[in-house]
Amino acid sequence: MAPQAPSTPTGSDRSASTPGSTPSRTTPGGTVVKTSHWDPGNAAYKTLMDKKKADAKEQRRKRMSGLLDRLRKNESVVENVAWWSLTTDECAQIFTLGSRCTPLTTLYCDGNGLGSRPSGISVLLLSPQIQLTELTMTENNLGPEALKAIANALRTNQTLLLLDVKNNQISDNGTNYEGLKTLSDCLDAQGGKPGINYNITLSSLDLSGNCLYDYGVNTLQTVIQHNTVLSELHLANNGMTQEAGKFLLECLKTGSENGSILYSMQLLGNDIHLRELSKIQKILDKSAGLRRNWESKVQSRFVKGNMKGKPKSIREKNGTLSSPERK
Image 1 (tube, rainbow, N blue to C red):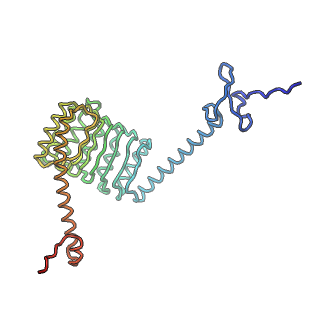
Image 2 (cartoon, rainbow, N blue to C red; image 1 turned 90 degrees about the vertical axis):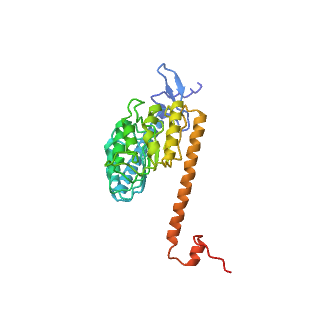
């Protein structure tokens, strides 16, 4: 009698297939089909995915533990927790410990779904112990209330130089501009009322992708016209029209007359005519030239100040002193 061919293993006994053989499984209709070793129904695949998830969880735990230890030991300068999917408690821990970490200057906290929980952010910005200069919080769904809390904290904070809050629905899709208005008032030190604290250090602000529309430019009018510290303001992908472009151009002209140093503005993704964009660029280029002249003067003064008291030969070598020609 001829030997019978071995039967194809079904879904229940596919794990018993010989090494090197192709696994198979039985469909609900009773049909046996061949599968890949990477098929989700394969037991080896499930085991491998479970191991990967466990390894990722352990790696995340170690990473979080290391971050908190650095903050506790006052050893953290730049921290990047972007896209860590932080929980509410983890955010609170980072902000609380960060507010006591003296060397901390930069925090990247993008994509963590913070929502409208602004208290921890305010603690960080109001801390007198740290010198935080850069804070990025893109894609956190902050909303108008969180932006309002950040703006109020900035009235006291005088160390932050860069704030990035793009893609955060800070206008609630064009229905609530209270947060933006508070931020605009906070940055209007030149045109504001006496006796109220204003921020005079922030030099870079990114509000892109927040559905500000044309009314957003109106709300930022005082900042563009009066602020003499802000040098970068980005408003890309905000649904602005040609009317907003014209109004923005007039605001920049007034700001230039008032001593504005705004030289960088990202406006991609808005429906503004190229003609207005070219005129805006000319004004920004003019401010950039003035800024370069100012920076060169400051640098020259700094170099000369550091050369004082040093031998003449060293000063001549550094180009800060020209020797008279000998006759």
